[in-house]
Amino acid sequence: MSNPDPSRPVPADPNPGGRDPVSALRDVVTATSRAFAGDQSLTPSLDSSPKPEMGDYSSNAAMVMSKGLGRPPREVAAELSGLIETELGDLLDRTEVAGPGFINLFLADDWYREAVADLAGGGLGVPPVETPGHILVESVSANPTGPLTAASGRHAAYGDAVTRLLRKVGHDVATEYYVNDGGTQIENFAGSIAARMTGTELPEDGYRGEYVSDLAERARAEGIAPDDLDRLARSGVGWMVESIRASLISFGVEMDGFFSERSLYEGGLVERGIERLREAGHTFEQDGALWLKTTDFGDDKDRVLVRSGGEPTYFGADVSYHADKVERGYSLLIDVLGADHHGYVARMDAAIQAMEQPGVSFEVQILQMIHLVEGGRRTRMSKRAGDIVTLDELLADIGNDAARFFLLQRSSDRTMDLDLDLARSQSSENPVYYVQYAYARIQSILRKAGEGDIDYGAGASTAVAVDPSEKALIGRLLDYPAEVHEAASRRAPHRICAYATEVAAAYHAFYRDCQVIGAEGEGLEASRLLLCEVTGETIRHSLALLGISAPDRM
RNA sequence: GCCCCGAUAGCUCAGCUGGAUAGAGCGACUCCCUCCUAAGGAGUAGGCCCCAGGUUCGAAUCCUGGUCGGGGCGCCA
Image (tube, rainbow, N blue to C red; front, side):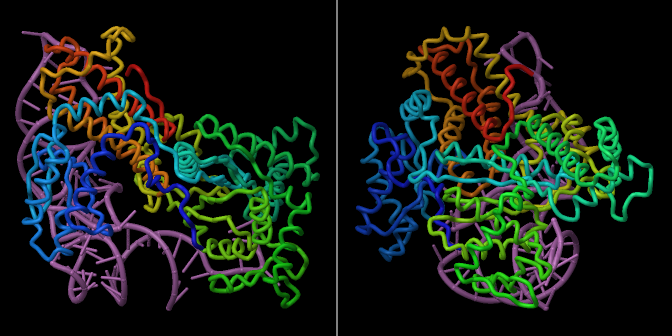
């Protein structure tokens, strides 16, 4: 369905008082280019360049313009660069026409000094989106018939990071876990506990995990009779949800709510949700069952909501759950699902459309599978077979920070292999330490400099040239707000992993090239301390978006 | 058969709403601690960006068709 992206970065000036240096630069380049070409529809881009030898910043304006003007790009670039030089004046060191028609802008040292001052003066703030949404992120939602697996960890880490990103750019976000505490799987689960209590055969497809015996133990202690399956089911699920919640919290993931499937039935919400669709005229009866005409909304076949026996299907219940979400007034519903639920997307999307609720968008983020590899082979990860590696075990093995980074650094639409042996043995070489180390180094310097006593105000040294490593670092820091918006709107926290790594690399290079404490030259030490401070904050904020800590010492 | 995801360095992967000489980590090799944390840095080696067409001034990126790998196509949940 059409989905006006609510987290697109604000096109207009978010902060009329103080335009950030990069945006200001982009404005000048764009305005000058358009004036030159006399065409408002052309939008030349300005890129920060990771390669200093290609210019501090680079514009492809000439290539964009040349087509409309019918002139060779390099010829346009030569003329245009002169105009840009005039416009930018003292902020610019020089320009250079390069390649097929790029204009490289080498900015003056003063521009960089002002940029750092801007960052220190609040430039690290991320401007909010133009129209903040009221968003519900549903994630994990693993069956409450066993502990959370390491694979669920990917969902937990992803859902949490996306939530943090969306909040960072100004959305109001709630998180929820859907508890499938009804249906045959739960009967099976209760039956498995009972079997362990009485020492009899497990049901076919029963749950074989060690934890089931623990649950049996607990049931016995609380005096629940093995044949009271209903109570076993309720208590067993309750204990599992409790344990799941605890695992999530120890992973730093806080769910605002756990929504029980069973409560849908008990609260009459299933009838209500289905009634809503019936009234909208999108259902029909056939073979004694009630169907939703999802094919009207792009699905490839229609789906049953209520079985011929009168029982709602899982889909019917889930539709009702989503009807409830819609009624709660969210502007955007995001479901984070595993790749094995992909076939479910079209019908749910159709159901939401059938609810005919304008102003509500629905979006599904599919996470590809994660395979656990141990001893060189893939483990099965089946709760039923009891052959699982739990999230708790993973965290005990490699720790929260390493696990978070590991699970988040890859794009969500890529299948992952999590090699546990490798994760354990290489945990000290996890890229997260590379980033954290940069932060620890910074804190060490700041401590040594005598925290808080630095006269940052004296930072504008005019006597000493800004080192290329400093320029590169400042350039990366200036990208922060744009990176956050990009990652938020694309629901791509892995970009923040990459960004944080780049900032750390730029800092390590700066650390090598530039003495901070005791740097000689008027105001140079203070100026570099300020840069350290700003870099540290950028790293800390970036890691926080991923739910990763920034230790002062390592 | 249909739908979704992937294919980029020896390995694991970034880059994909078109731009310059395609990057990082790990692994291999060579260097750098009288100096703010060597969990770091500098350098070397290593690439038909799966294949074939197409669009474009320009394609790893977009389109079409293949190949290979993963997942999904219940009145199960």
